[in-house]
Image (cartoon, rainbow over all chains, first blue to last red; front, side):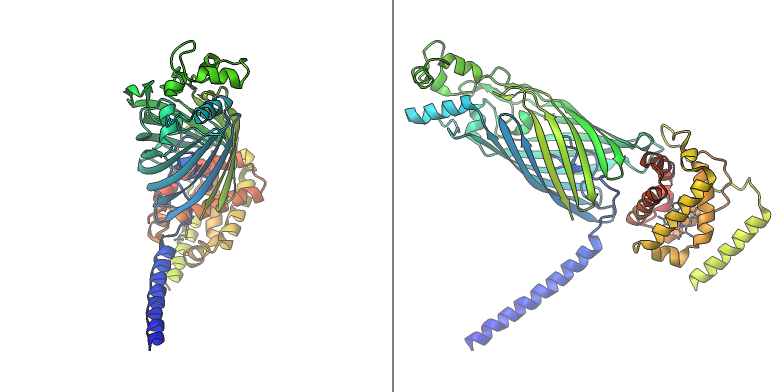
Length: 358
Length: 156
Ligand code: HEM
């Protein structure tokens, strides 16, 4: 009796599931759409939105047309001299009009000076909440995005200069709060907004995009937003307008090469890493001095270490090649010129991104 | 039945226009793409014969594509459309306007063509370029010149 009752509910559940999947697969079949022309949805940006490598475009992600839904998942790996980054996320385009995106970003550091600070802090057993790890510190951020196409058409109205125009926003949550604070940022989570203009000039087989972003991000938010003086004082997190530019030349219907420029702020410029007591004061005032002297045999003193921990930020540049062998996936390879990132100089390196679309 | 009467009417219209044969019959205008198209586009397509060959390939790929072939089978007439498309494409590529067919809106308005179907024809167009060894960059001159018709053709 008990058994039959159990199988009865199971049966009902099974039926309900079957009915549900029938309904959903039916409506899905009706809404699923991959009718867009090659690469015109853009690829997977570091913010998750459809666009180039770093710059969100006005085009809506995925291969859907105005009659359906499409989207995909993306993975990007970046290798720089002192950092490596992973971006894993996805985006969905609705009716070539609206887009939702998500990315989970991890930045791993390979910085001798920062590791030293972390090591000393742990040896001294001072709990300064620096958020540092002697074996290499990590930054972690999640980005939620939405984009709305307002007017214009990038592809079809080739007899008009009116570009496709969209507005979008990101909400970025950096969960490595202590590290971000140590890097003197004012906030570990914040929003940013942008307006993008995209046009394809078929005459020259070229896509051109201009984006203006309203933000206070440091390194797209990976090192937080805004900045403070040491001790988390005099914080400033005022947003400003920054310009981004992206162009792609189509060599083939499914192969493009191009370049990007992204203006960055420099709010953490000359801000030392905020190590609290550890590196405080001049000369031999800091707790760290004698230890570092001992550790590295006096070759590099604490003052040198402190100087090496001064931050800077540069505008980003990149050149890329994007290839879409089919409408189901694209591969983007880029070389990045990211300049100074936090305490490391001249961070140039390779970028590899895969975007699978369904 | 509907398709039959349509084709009958079209056939009649075609033979009439062939009889009247007025070159001034211009139901469709040359498009005005921004920045224009390369002046050598028609030549790079292989001239009139090249365009004709390209249109043949175009319909070959269209009729192989299950997403759109049924529409052409039901409402179209490949022979007539090959003839008229050749005229139209010669015109938009910078040649003389000898187009004798209906305007793009008149020809497509009641077909309820979707964006995805339109893009399927665009894919066939690129395939036809590749098949006929027309450079991608040259092919884009034609895409450039035809793109403004989208609004007239895609009505759904
Ligand atoms: C830029 C793209 C296109 C161009 C330049 C074009 C051109 C033409 C031309 C010149 C005609 C002949 C008009 C006449 O009979 O007087 C025609 C008819 C037709 N086209 Fe298109 N066309 C385009 C896109 C499409 C698409 C996307 C479809 C469907 C998926 C389509 C389906 C048809 C059909 C079924 C006819 C025959 C209509 C009839 O005879 O009543 N066309 N087209």
